[in-house]
Image 1 (cartoon, rainbow, N blue to C red):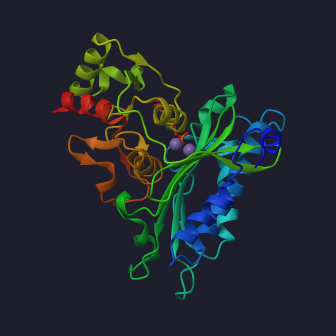
Image 2: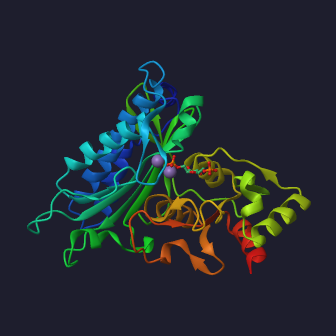
Image 3: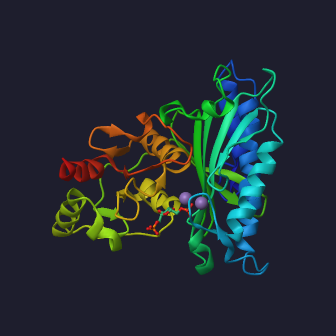
Length: 335
Ligand code: AHG
Ligand code: MN
Ligand code: MN
């Protein structure tokens, strides 16, 4: 490409998410394209949700719907809208057998008869950090893709696999730009939505999380009800000049940590004795992404998030995740 053309393209390589997915598919001679179709539904969903989030105030869809979801938390109007978008788009993809969402008590079985092409389960948090919406803060979508187990006695049982078996995981951050971060099990790649062409453009390949950074991210308002080891860690971190950064939307906090380093924690609390975050569609996909980028994600010393065998789709877990040295510092105070 000559320099004139380069200037026209702003120096960007212009590999779209779509092209990236096809590239990955071609590298795997056994790939049938089913997963690519599912990822394309997630990419379109991300564009639709971007537009809904950006227009929320103008379209008067801020605020809560007035009742709680299955988690006992206030559902925001945009939680419901984003959930609908994902259910509809994924529902149109033949390869999806089951979807499970934070916003639905039961998983939705789309196709349970006949072998066919129904190969995958998709679990998602349609809008993470949705209480940030009213104040124009960052929110996100998180997804996890598992293989559908044709031999499971009930289709739902197919969902209860440890996170280590995820085929793909990713998140979308609706921040000052919309960012799509994806892992297909071979590193982590990042894409930014170019609104002028309506496509996600690849901006980084094989991201690596910084090994250390003196920054922690936790809701310190809960400190008095954390197990004592976490309190000892916080004392240690403050004595050692750490900064505190907490957005209150895990996608936004972990995106910062992926790029700049640090550690994110949601310990058990008096209100949430098993932790607040959901294993299957919050902790697992984030753990896969952070591990793929060279980080760590643990529920307790020596216990990887990705090894937890789930017993229900909405189960919660404590979570310590981020730069490897920073996770180690937390764990050293928990033993
Ligand atoms: P969601 O909006 O999907 O329910 O998730 C909110 C989660 C997570 O994003 C965030 O890190 C955490 O809840 C914040 O919880 P606290 O307000 O208790 O700190
Ligand atoms: Mn969430
Ligand atoms: Mn949510």
